[in-house]
Amino acid sequence: LDLESDLRLALDRDELCLYYQPIMDLEAGVPLGFEELLRWQHPAHGLLMPDRFVPIAEETGLIVPIGSWLLKETLNQVQQWRRDLAEGPDLTAAVNISGRQLVAEDFPDIVETAIRETGIDPSAVNLEITETVLMDEPDLPKETLQRLYRMGVGLSIDDFGTGYSSLSYLKWLSARTLKIDRTFVQELAADPRAGTVIELVLGMANSLKLDVVAEGVETESQLRELRRLGVTQAQGFIWSKPIPAEQVPAFLSTFP
Ligand code: G
Ligand code: G
Ligand code: MN
Ligand code: NA
Image (spheres, rainbow, N blue to C red):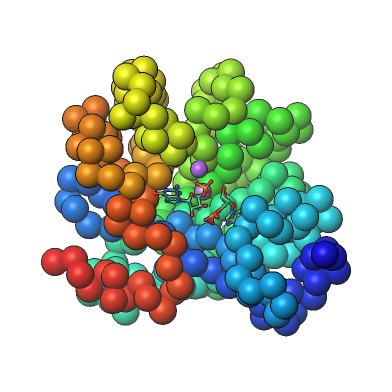
């Protein structure tokens, strides 16, 4: 199955599409924003999930043009919801960024152009970078991170807790958000230490003035426990799976 040659054509053939999952404000009980998640409507194999093709896109470098496209597409989409929907004005846009994009010299220009062309407030933009990328990238371009910070764009550390966290990067990174990996949420019921780890992350995040999002919330009991620990932002199937853009207005209309 030669997905690589198909992937080279997918962008031009309009086969890539974006799904969106709400990120919830637990105190207000409303969505505060949406995370973009990439899908590939393959002509022969149907709807492919990112784990099937993002690694190929990263190896081949195709993630760079694909990533530029989806950044612009997401900012445009979220800006439209911010403008057009009663529940939309403060929504944030979370966009997954791979290491290959981050180390490209023109990445800050690409972000700046996407923001200018879509007209979205830069403070509504969160770029999600996995902790593993931050640890593994030896030449993490600090200039890029500083330029993004000066633009007012937020950085979210994705899958936090799964990498080999030296934590030293938190000092100079000026991130806005830590996203606690869903494995910690899933272990809450079975392993009391999972809750302790989340409490420690919240304490550290509080000292560093970082927001914390808990990922992968599926059950009421997980939600109750996360609230008890002091988590104020979360996402997961309990509210919604990732959904196509067309379904977002109906989702938003269910909130007061
Ligand atoms: O639902 P889900 O299967 O969508 O996503 C699986 C993984 O693929 C996630 O860990 C996510 O970080 C990654 N992913 C999803 N969308 C994108 C994207 O647009 N760019 C990159 N680099 N990774 C993505
Ligand atoms: O970018 P990130 O690695 O955080 O990607 C989010 C991934 O988590 C996507 O694959 C998405 O479909 C998945 N996801 C989102 N909410 C839930 C959930 O409640 N349970 C599970 N098992 N997966 C989730
Ligand atoms: Mn993510
Ligand atoms: Na994650």
